[in-house]
Amino acid sequence: MQATISEPVWRQVNQLRKAGDLPGAWNTGFAGLAENPQDRYLKGALFWVCYDYLKGFLQPIMLRGQQNSGYRPNDREYRDIDGILEVIGQLQIPAGGFEYSRLLALFRKNMDCFPSLVRLVMQHQGDLFSDEDKTPYISDKGESPSLLLNTARKVASAWQNFGKQWQLPLTDVLALLDRARAECRDTQHKLWLDYDQARCLVMAGKNREARQFILPVLKRKQSESWAWGALASTYRQEDSEAAIALFAKGIGCAMNDQFAIPLLKGIAPLLMAQGKSREGSLFIKRLVDIYQSQGWAVKQNIADLTHNSDYDQSVDLAELQSVIIQLSSEALSYLHGPTRQCVGVVERCHQSGKGFDVYLSQQKTLSVRLGLHQQASGQRKLPSPGDFVTLTLTESDPECVEVVASKNSEPVDMDGVGTLTGILRVNPKGFGFVEDTFVPPLLLLKGMDGQRVTVIRVKSVDRKKQTIGWKAIHLGPCEDISAGQD
Image (cartoon, rainbow, N blue to C red; front, side, top):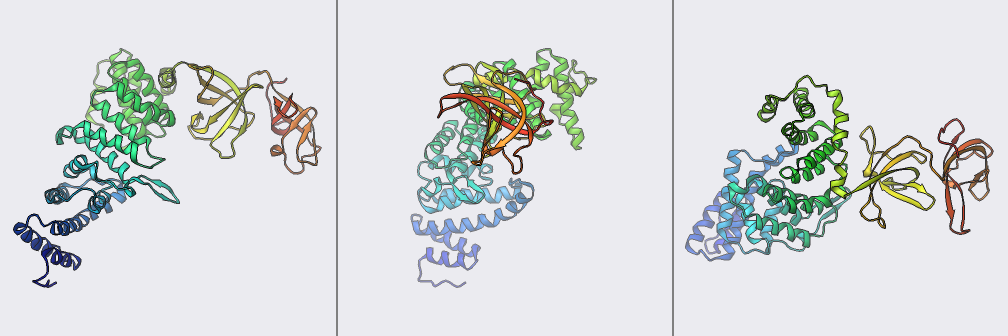
């Protein structure tokens, strides 16, 4: 496109860029900047030329990433992109404008690959983010992280991977994480800032500080293997027994082999160093088994474990599950302090499907989050009313007992819990009775009136009448239920 000679250079640059002539816009702009290096309008116009170049360089990377979830550039792409980013830095565009928000949004997926961009964020972090950048995007699929939160996480990732190589100060990274924690309006993703800070602190050798950040994350993510592994890593250097228990707990939570690999790598050397060669050999053999079953080449650090003189290849992997249970028996105490166990019966499931209430006595019923309930199959599935469960409870504060774990249990004799077989009588108002046992409307189905049924029942307090009576929590055919009798 032919620009008018009398027009300002910055306007010529904009016209050339909008016409698709990026080389012409680049050459015209930087020739003009050499003559007038303080022209802020020209610098702004050149920023958008750089931006359009970056969009073009990023396009094939984004297409690859959509196919394999990897957004790392190849060497040529890295050189092209980092060169443009260095030019943007030399333009010295004032922070606080629209430019840097657009730039950071462009690199949402792989900002942590480019030192020039990471340094720019760390240098100008106090002025880069608008109110819009601190607000998450809400869609029908849920909440997407705000630009501030996403950027803070990418900078933390860059420090973990390249901190020494790029000479990135940890203090600046932690300051950005603190800023994001204080200023972003995200509700679903803030805990990841704590997780990232914990990982950075572990790498910096500040394990006690790291523990304070990972503990709240793990309390919300107790069914996630990576969360147990993160806490285990804070104990690796100072308390191998704690690390072993936590790694083992994480392995027991791993939903697939890929999630278990980093925890197996963590626990095996600790066990071998303690002289527990049988247990260590089981985890090493399991590691090798995973790689071979997937058709992967066994990595050198894993092969080195098999060369340990105490490694016993003949161990039977059928024993592994019992060893995991044994080693992880104290894991919850590192998360919650002293705990105790008790057996109760599921009284009802929440309508939300996210939890259930457990009857312990006529004075006490506790609510349990679904995420705390461990099924033998590993699936997250609500138990049914009338099922017995073993709860693990905190002991540190008798006035504020907290459920920290739940699992299925065999039926036991409990005061205030029993079964009764009899004829169901349904009241026109919608509730029913089996002899002296009240049957709530939710348990009744059409056509059940007059049927012979068996109920599982609990003694409960009728707050209106201030009396104690029997209430059914499960109703079925008389041959359906076999639990302890009154």
